[in-house]
Amino acid sequence: MRLSERAIRTVKASLFVIALLPLAHLAAGAFIFPDWLGVNPAEYITRSTGDWTLRLLLLTLTVTPLRRLTGWTWVLRVRRMLGLFTFFYSVMHVSSYVSFDHVFDVGEILKDIVKRPFITVGFSCLVLMTPLAATSTNRMVRRLGAKRWLLLHRLAYLIAPLGVLHFWWMVKRDLTEPIVYALLLSVLLGYRIVARLAARHPAKSQPLRA
Amino acid sequence: MLIKRPKDVKPSEITPLGIYRRRREFVATAGVLALGAVSGMGTKPAIAQDGAKLKGFGKSKFSTTEKANAIKDVSGYVNYYEFGTDKTDPPQYAKKLKTQPWTVVVEGAVKKPRTFGIEELMKMQMEERIYRLRCVEAWSMVIPWIGFEFNKLANLVEPTGNAKFVEFHTALQPDNMPGVRLPVLDWPYIEGLRIDEAMNPLTILSMGMYDEVLPNQNGAPVRLVVPWKYGFKSGKSIVKIRFVEKQPRTAWEKANPQEYGFYSNVNPDVDHPRWSQKTEKRLPAFFANHKTQLFNGYSEQVASLYTGMDLRKNY
Image (cartoon, rainbow over all chains, first blue to last red):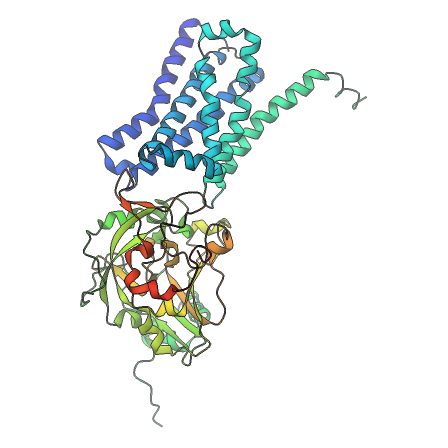
């Protein structure tokens, strides 16, 4: 499936609007329809922005396998936007933790980061994502050079497992959701490992059949 | 020949629960419901219907004067893992909980073990207790419960000297509880108290809130309320109470002993390993808006239970 320049622009614009829907839902709930967010709106917002960070992160990591499997090159054109929305929701997620849970008490937050492993891990994700967001422009790609830029952006392969781990350690008891995320992520990362091994040893899989 | 029948005998008193339930199935499957009706066994007073009003309960000096939550807060935001782990799962799924017939078996180290039908418990003199409820997840509410002190029930069965602890077994209805399909906790949910904690006048068995019978998701038809401990100690939908000699192993303790101890008293100085317990969010609210108090503010009534105990060790 090849898309015209115009079609790609339409896809990008639609995706932009769709990616803002969760935020619109939260904003409407916070300011207009309090029933949407329930009795504990802060918890709802923190959970929801965290969920969307993970979902968008997985979606971003789906782009490359999708292109390889389908040959659609246009999907590469939305990857940056997906990545930036991942960062955007993670910032919202951290902001709700900083404001609702700690009311901007820096001392308490620092103590939390040191003391509680799931916060340590979550906070590392934000720290690791920041340079990726900062180097997302075309100019930064050129300045860094494609090779170095790619190397830097491999951090995503570290951030994603840490993000799932953060969720895993946060959950009180029911691990169903973290397990689902972990499985999806292992498929996405597993695909890359397999593809790489296959590319490195193209002949190896053959002799077995001979 | 004249056969004398004691006045107040109920089927639930003389028949073990399992057989009692099977009787209903038998009656139904045999298609002789009429027989049950004739013998008076198939009919029960409709008491546990959602929203039924309760009357004739008094006020209590133990009630707080703080503003109570709206009923929709309490019935809409609930931890009742048997119906799912989201706060909005129980309001959605607990309708299926079968609350009739209902009996509470009271046994163990007691002189007069007994099975109470729910209608007998509803006849006990009840009162309103407006209590603070502090969840281990650092939110809180103020709830007007209706019930009676647990010690009144205990006195009816006369605990022996061997009764050092009390175990509370809650309902397990796999067909009606979507949450128990996963081994999230060791079902059925079992909670426990030390005997002196159970006998403390603050510990109540509650059958209602806000002038009404309990909504299913809040633990209908009868639940425990222990206001100075984290909410999970107050077991819902109780089917069995055992007086025992050894400290029971409770559901959350079994699930995660590093995070949840047997005592689980509200204590701002003992953090949950993953979050602080210093403050709490009195719902509905965006921000933590209350300092958490030792024993949830009930020190005057309960602090003496723990004199000389290291509350950090016995969390």
